[in-house]
Length: 419
Image 1 (spheres, rainbow, N blue to C red):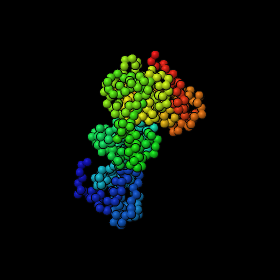
Image 2 (image 1 turned 120 degrees about the horizontal axis):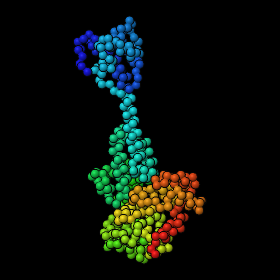
Image 3 (image 1 turned 90 degrees about the horizontal axis):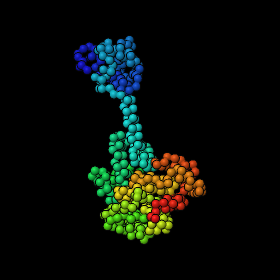
Image 4 (image 1 turned 30 degrees about the vertical axis):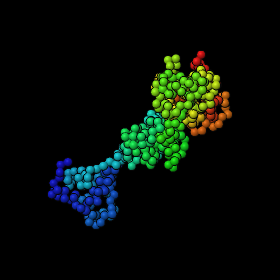
């Protein structure tokens, strides 16, 4: 805007100190982003009331708390200076804002953040984490900032995507996942708190309150774990190669026994390849050790490749399954038909690229007909591979544990057992 000649009579009137409250209030009203018809002032002292009366051409002093019509003010300002009220206020007080527009933009930014979070692959693959996402939204923005919140959530998602860990100490794991920030997951940091809340949601437990509970949750997630106590059992594996896991698995399979492999074994497998005879390289995976025991009892040394997660899979289980996939195997997973079983299945499928095995709504309905009086399935969350499964379980209100469908699973295994 072209600078005004402050020596002009009209400009001198507009710049009277006594009119400053008028321009200050007008600035606030016009910056609201809402329609303005009147400007309410006050309380004004006598000199301020006189200045206002002079500006508006009033024949008497206005009230100490007057309400000035914007149209009347525009008329007076234009007559004095040839400019609009907005132009005068912007010059005398500062640029006008748009608080309503800014609030709308902030609301849109916040809504966009939570939509972004809900759409992340980790959340979609493990729907139970939608509860965690909802708790993040309820907690609000970090420091009132969408960008700071998005950055923190992005780091949390990176961590969750890398779990379970491989028994690395927490600072080593953090440095590897978070671009060298070794202390980003130290106890008490915002990121550590956020990730532990997600892990508690996954495990259907309350958020940890003590240092011991936090350490236990990290250990369960494979961070700061023990390479020897973290084990996985498998049967029927006949990998070729001279690596220790391959030799242990072959010896146990030939004896008709399960092999117990430690995390140390599967982290450093050495030579480990799947035989060409294993076509089409399918490895079945079950949740419960009893299914593996029944398979070994029935098939002995001819047992098809079978891995057991023993409930929630630990680091050793996930590492072995990933090793098998890397060597060309296709994984097919089955677990309990209850709330936790569905969450475990979603976790295994997300972490290992396994495929569901007899885990559809139709499979559940067939099983519940034969076993209609099971316990309540507990808290149900969506099964990403079949949205109708959780609905069917909620309708029947009955859990079907894996042991009750063992006969069906064993028949599937019999179809691929060694002749």
